[in-house]
Image (spheres, rainbow, N blue to C red):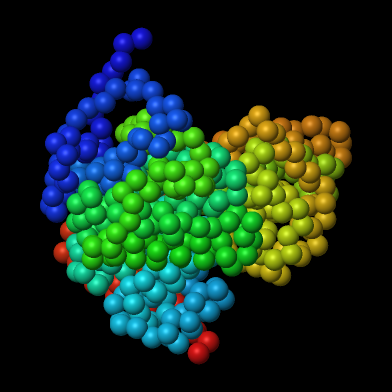
Length: 498
């Protein structure tokens, strides 16, 4: 089959051997869709770090198609909603108290707490707050949550540096694409070995984003990625505890620091991702340069961003949708359900298969519990549905006892599930669902995101303020600096405990 030449969304590496300049401009090239990944033995010689760094440094605002710009704005709006709502969580109060005790220059806003702190502390707190409810967006290329590591670091840096909305959008896209390309580089082994990719690859994604906002050249960006590589950590075994959202905050703060240190001349290996005992060798994967430069379907990973409309781990969403569909289609009553079987990917083990959750946080990572909630008609989009009190609701617990989960090794995709219900009358009902398909209608998605946003911030903002913030994000491209946005996010969302 003949190869087809396609335009790369990223700028290619400058083949003259010189770094991209500080303006971020580079030269375009094309690649073929039939390019095959190099064999795994090429890990030690392929210049993966340099390739990713060069593409990041070369990306310009004008490279972003209009639909990609809209997706960036949607990511920001969704992030603001989940962060304002998450700002009241106990773990965020603890982190804010820690920041107050440590002190520091007032460089950046802590969302929802009417306080400013150092850029790094702000990224840590805001990143943790935005992931506290596990209601933030995902991308399956990296099996992680890009926005909660990228936006906190970029907002903190942009606020202290006076960057424009277009600067922010370009840097966000650079970090997002880098993080997802790294997901392809590391492969499934990284995640299956127990690493939380939001924490690990997110650190490098945040470093790439901040390097672009600082207008670092390709060499300095590679250094930032190297510094971030040696900081990358986070365990999936922490799911269901405060450490999971802390992973996002730490990744954001560490990525920010990595870029800032690189800008000061701090040194690191220029091949930290692919070198012996580097990121890939220690964290798992059979990477190649081919994976690092592969063009995603549609040209941009941002076109495959998935937003959450259930306040739980994304691995539960397909089963929730399937169960909800059966309940509504067949007018099922709880007392009419005899037995429920959830067939899902074996990748759900260690991610969202807590059998008997004891807290609201654990319930977000329980296929059994979330399916029982859906069959009981509980609104899984509402935050109160995942309170500690709601987890012990007798009707839901009794229904959960009738749910069994069967994990299939041959199904590696977290976004695929089938729900089978045996009714008291002997009828067997089946429904499959794939939650991994991105929205095709962006205007409809915008409406859903605005509805979700209003639901999340209704206790913080009055309707007029909601409209103002939605409009401000819609005009992000026009903002010469982000101080208007920071001003709105600085208001008190909940009572601090100090």
